[in-house]
Image (cartoon, rainbow, N blue to C red; front, side, top):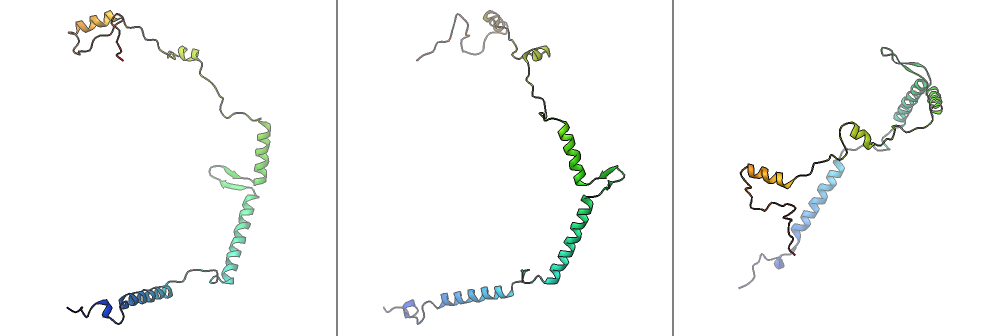
Length: 161
């Protein structure tokens, strides 16, 4: 049988669909770049806008300087006043120089006598358990229900190697 006339080897341009796909992609990408919204760039800021911003900044700095160097009320109802920064630093330095450095909190250790005096000993003593009393209590309860032997001084555990 002869080969099908629709095979790739029989076509004049075997990669034609791939080429059209690439051309379409490039066309759409170019169109997207052309239609994108333009953002603010350094070239779009005009000189007049810069002058307005500079005037606002100068005015703000003058207001802040006036507030930092004058007396006034921060909250008159609560009685909170504002003082110049230089005066506040002088007051702070004077108070710091009059008070020598010291730890913020005293470093203390707990004395064992203080614990026992408070009624809570450091290591509470537990009275020793007598095996005869334990055996009598178990017998009074009806005996041991477990099958493990009771360990006593006369019946120590054996360790097998």
